[in-house]
Image (cartoon, rainbow, N blue to C red; front, side):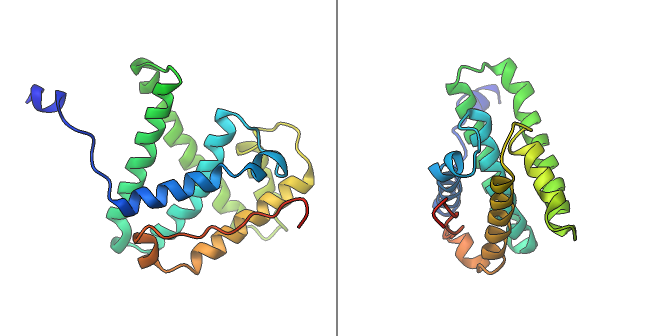
Length: 184
């Protein structure tokens, strides 16, 4: 039993799950977020951009119910396995990982709650912008223009995903949309 665990290979993720995860991470890394949207180009800022896109994606997958449950779980597992690996590459040891990964999951669940509340509020995005300010921008000074653009961007990707076919997502195909730049 011990040797089985010791030599156990990493779980294999389907090509479709990997494609969706890579698309989500690539979208989160677009330079426009770190320039025009004023997101901090730091480990924390990039983590929070991934969580923002993950929130929108998991929101859509949750709407699929049992039909997408296994796929969503596999995507979740891959996301946190990748974050674990990234922390290791940054020099975080096993003891640090034992504390940080659960905190990262807790941070994600917290963001799900406040982003959902903000999207559902009838307050011209005041609650959503406040949630973004606290969670994405970590209360660092940011222009109201950037908060407004980010709130609209989140609404846009939610709309894009609401209109997306779940079968396409489960094939690893996704279109988040193009974030606006200063020129648009």
